Length: 402
Image 1 (cartoon, helix red, strand yellow):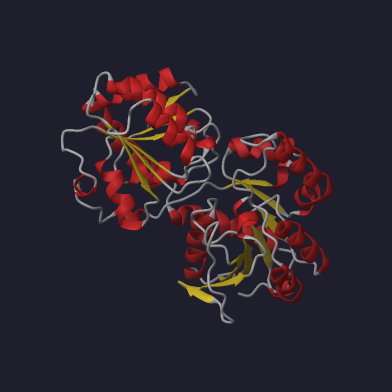
Image 2 (tube, rainbow, N blue to C red):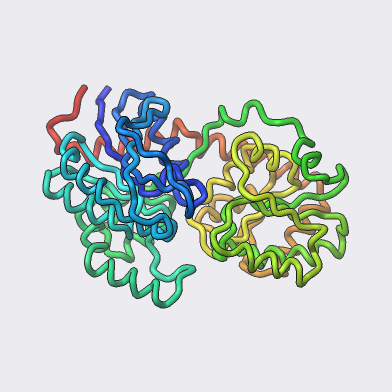
C-alpha cells in the first residue's frame, strides 16, 4: 500500500459551534490514519466565539491523528472565518516540506493564502476543498462581498490556479469552481460521508420526547444545524403556522448553536404566539442528537443556500424522512428519497402536511433513504475517493512511502 503523509489545514477545528467542515475533516482524517497514512492537522485554538482551547506543546492525538492547535489573535474574527494565526505561519514555513501534500479545507482565509505561499516555496502540492465557500454572494452584505472580491483578486484566484486538485462536494460546487476559472480537469467530486457503524445502536424512541415534555401523540418537526439566517428558519416558522391549523399539538424543534440569528427568530416566534409549540434546544451532540432524530416525524432543512449538509445523511441513517429545499446542493440526489421543495413557505407547509398525514409514505421514504445513504455515502467508500485524489496530487513527490 502506498503511504501518504498529509497535512490538513482547517482554521476552526474542532470549533463545532463556529460551523463548517470540522467534523467531516476529522472523520476522514481518522479513517485515513487507520488505513496507514500519516495525517496531521494544523488548526487554531478557537472553541467558540468566546472561549479557547488550552494550547499545549504536544499535539492532541485523536484516533491516530495528530492535531496541532495554534493561537489565533481573535475568536470573533475566527467566527467570521477570518482567523489570524502567526504561530501557524511559522509552523508552515518550518514543517510543510515534511509532507507529501497539503489538504486545505477552506478558501477565503489568511491561512489559505499562507498555505499556497509556503507550498509553492517548498514545492509541495496542495489540494483545496472550499466546503461550500466559493460563491461570492450568498448570505453576505455588500461590504462582505467587496472584501471577498478583494481577497480573490489578491489571493483567491491564485490559490485555485496553483492547487493540484480542487475537491467539490457535488456537481453544483464543481460548477461554482469552473465559474471561478478552475480547469475542470482539476476538479474531483467527493461527497460528505457518514459511518454506518455509528447508527447500528440507535436510542430507543421516546427519550428525546420525555426529556422535553413532548406527548407521544404529538407530531415532531425537527431542524438540526446552525441557527443562521442562511438556513431559512424564518421560512420554516412561517410554514409551521400552517401546519398548526391541522396539527394543533405539533412541535417544531430547532436545535443548534446560535450564529447571530437566534434573537430574530425568538422575536418572530413570540410575535406569532408559537412559544408553546416551538422548542429551542441549543446545540445537540452525540447521543442527544441521535435521540432527536429518532423521535422526529420528519427532518426539515429549509436552507436558502447549502452545499452538502451532513445532517440530511444523519437523519436518513436514523430512519427519519427528510424535506429540503431545492437550494441545497444535495437536493438532486434526494429527489427519490425525500421531498424537495422550492424556497417557499406555502410549498414547505404543503410538503409537511402531506408527510405528517401519511404514515405509510413516511416509512417508505425513510427506508429507501436509509438504504441509499448507507450505499452511496458510506465512510469507507468516500475515503477511497480521497485516497485516489491524494495519490494523484502527490504523484510528482518522490518521498511517498510504500
